[in-house]
Image 1 (cartoon, rainbow, N blue to C red):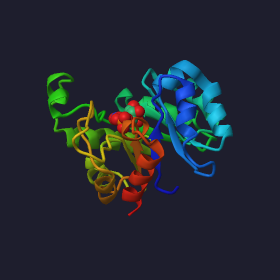
Image 2: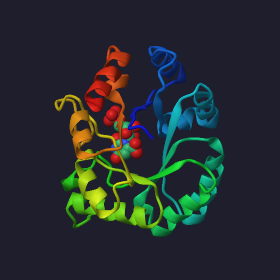
Image 3: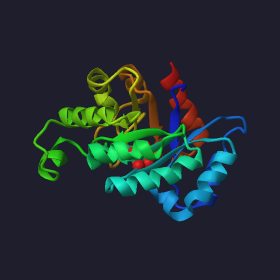
Image 4: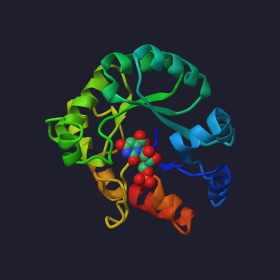
Length: 230
Ligand SMILES: O=C(O)c1cc(=O)[nH]c(=O)n1[C@@H]1O[C@H](COP(=O)(O)O)[C@@H](O)[C@H]1O
């Protein structure tokens, strides 16, 4: 797989979303992330529609439930021909393995979310009461995902070298929390620029608001691609 810039489609309505996509040239092969906001509104027909238009799809449902429920859900999603799906690594070994079994026979890559990029060291310690350094917690969850046959993880770009070292160079590290300008972090805590993510070895970056809220979304996307592909 080429190293893509994945655009997070976090729009309030499908009209706004299609308008956004119409800014791009027809032959632009985009990799799109459909997350909870759009999936809850438009469900599978929206996913199918975008697949039929030729987009690659990262279905970001962040599944987190008992193994049987996750497995059965993944069996259904396996028929949808999406390229990536997320579960929470903190669902545990059995849940991750069950998700992978559910996806058997499909080409969908299973990605386990480690520590959300909106959580920093303080939240990890004070709110989640995890007595580990963020980097160690992320690496621990990545190892759990790797040992239970996930194809990769979601983490901040900052943790990629440690994850690759603890797992394998081929273990996918897909990194949101990307900010071309350090001044606009919004609710993200563990952030990196596209160039830094590339240097650290990310396999793909996920970018939402810096593109979707830009005055010219296409231009913002192209600028990020330029920095990422340099
Ligand atoms: O699973 C994800 O994609 C994800 C995990 C994570 O730890 N942090 C994170 O920001 N994301 C997603 O990545 C996107 C980032 O969006 P922006 O902050 O607008 O660039 C959002 O759609 C989040 O749901």
